[in-house]
Image (spheres, rainbow, N blue to C red):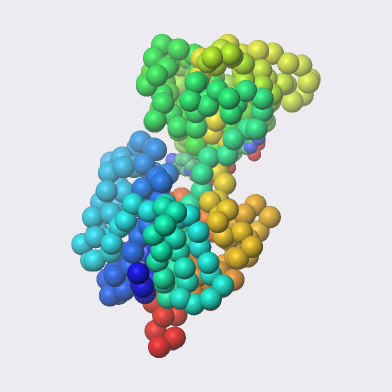
Amino acid sequence: MSESLVIIGSGPAGLTAAIYAARGGLAPVVLEGLQAGGQLMLTTDVENFPGFPDGILGPELMDLLRRQAERFGARLLPGDVSRADFSSRPFLVEANGSEEYLADAVIIATGAEARWLGIPGEERLRGYGVSACATCDGFFFKERRVAVVGGGDSAMEEALFLTRFASEVVVVHRRHEFRASAIMARRVLDHPKILVRWNAVPVEVLGEQAVTGLRLRDTITGAEEDLQVDGIFVAIGHEPVTGLFRGQLEMDHLGYLITKESSMTSVPGVFAAGDVADATYRQAVTAAGTGCRAAIDAERWLEAQE
Ligand code: NAP
């Protein structure tokens, strides 16, 4: 199928790009990816998206964006991109291993995915007590003791959410100061069900069939101790989803797409928006903003080609 614009990804960046491009008459195709709606589908309250003074649930916000994009003629398809070829125009984007789309322009808004610790036991026990999503799995830890690893906003959010179920939440952080915003850090520090283990890094996930504990190493003394927990929630940040574009588009050493002064990647006609090209801000609202920018850039670029 030949399209003017294919948008890869359906988080705030992809859907905002879709709203703008659709209103611009481009009838974009949005390949939604495995996790339609992106990371906000895995979160609960979003308190800092402008326009929602009482907050809004992540999935609800994404549903609104989706409806807004469809209202103007964006076509949202449940496709996971399996291959992309940007070596010649029109560009080729393949979804689900077989469906091929030819596109005059492409916006990449594939976002980021959870980073893992890479310690023994972690991968083996994923789904058996090891998780990166409290909203998905927190329910299974009623009256249990769980650990959350990390010191950023995600870790704070996970820890606070888990207090709804767990008897105790231990936040394990490798330094003595949180990276998280002051308001989130304060909520965690003040919570009666949350304990913070400062200056500790996980070295092994313990358990045969399911998690029974987490081995920690003190970053100051080097001493090791076993923390008895039934669940471990890893919240140590995210990595950009750019594997498919390696070798075709310029990236930085962490794999984030490099854009020039506009949202254009190193290949003219291929644009980037949202977390996939943003190692710094990574907010829903900045993703939406760059989605808008990419759609306008793509529209202007397409016009200039005619
Ligand atoms: P982040 O801000 O990069 O924080 C990652 C945390 O994990 C840091 O505290 C880091 O420690 C720790 N860490 C990283 N690698 C580690 C390792 N191998 N072992 C142990 N600890 C490790 O990531 P994030 O919390 O996912 O947040 C990402 C962005 O989304 C941020 O801009 C954040 O503000 C935003 N966000 C906002 C909200 C909200 O506003 N409600 C919610 C979630 C996320 P160090 O501090 O020592 O580096």
